[in-house]
Length: 335
Image 1 (cartoon, one colour):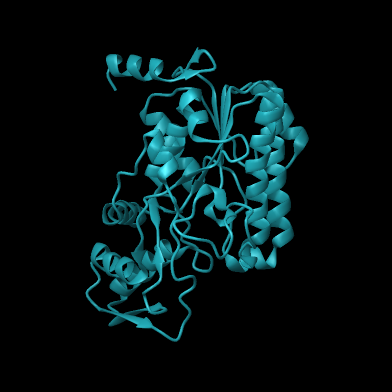
Image 2 (tube, one colour):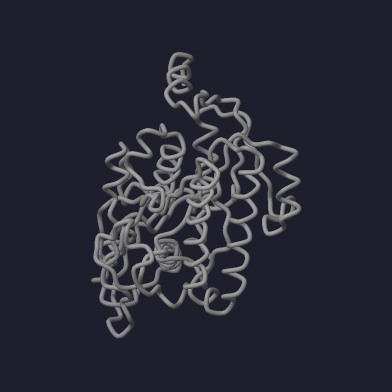
């Protein structure tokens, strides 16, 4: 970035009457995760030099004392709360108490310490699992708390809803500026490729890659391939997160409500699992056959979020699925 661009960027965003400086102290909680690491990359690329990062060993976010001490000592200007206990369906079903307790403690400790230490702005990252199992699509922000949640990850979803409501409640009572974003299905660099609890994109990528190496004749994908899903490349999510964090108060408040302030982040497009698998086959350069086991379940037929709120504010995604998969696979091969 040139000096001129740097100046333009610094004065572009006013925060509570102050200027968003490259030297401002920004604490990224969860900097090793999929989204947190992408946000760190974005900040470093933009020239921010005063990033605060701590591993779980260095700072246990479920400990109120440790979090309070950290905030009192470091006094961050801005906080990005991307830390969370995450896992697949099996983990959520097996350890529901861990998921609700640890996530709620992380949120409560960080958000309260941010308030007590006069953090200028905080951004909380949630998940679209906050929305009811059966709801009109595309899913608007106002669908929250209108029906029953998906039972398999209800404790995690409730914790994320609590995080949103913590931000809103502190804003209403204490005049803080704490904001929330809810991403759709994410993928990209630093994704989880665990064989038992990875999501659909890393699972498919790994399967096609192994089939290519082993010269397998076919790859079998569960279901009919007709289920439709929305996917967002993680670097786009990082950009959207910083866009919302930096947005001037007037624009932000004009597009949100005090008790309905969270913002969906996605592409506004769905692809079928069949289309995803065919694209993955091409990206990995697997030459065998692609088959679908139609006796296996598809899951929900369609899941798409409404992104009009964020679009009105001025942000849209830029990385198409095929390009994002190519970038992810290139990184995967290095690992």
